[in-house]
Image (cartoon, rainbow, N blue to C red; front, side):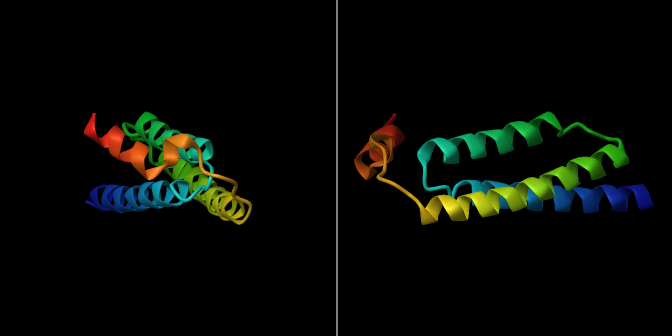
Length: 100
């Protein structure tokens, strides 16, 4: 029974980390960094989704927490020193992409 509770606790913690990483990754001012951070987050969590070893899960959670702190800092810095938006970031281009 305690392993089920532990698994549920890990699951909620992991989902919270995943949401936070995606949220802060989407705050990068530069399109390429933003896209990379979101893609890297999704790929890392997808690669580890079938992990069952509790010790390995704790290590992965710790790494994700460290990455979250890095992403928070870097996204803040990128917003402080942001440049012009790329053509692919313009509102008209976004509407075109959504139609296809």
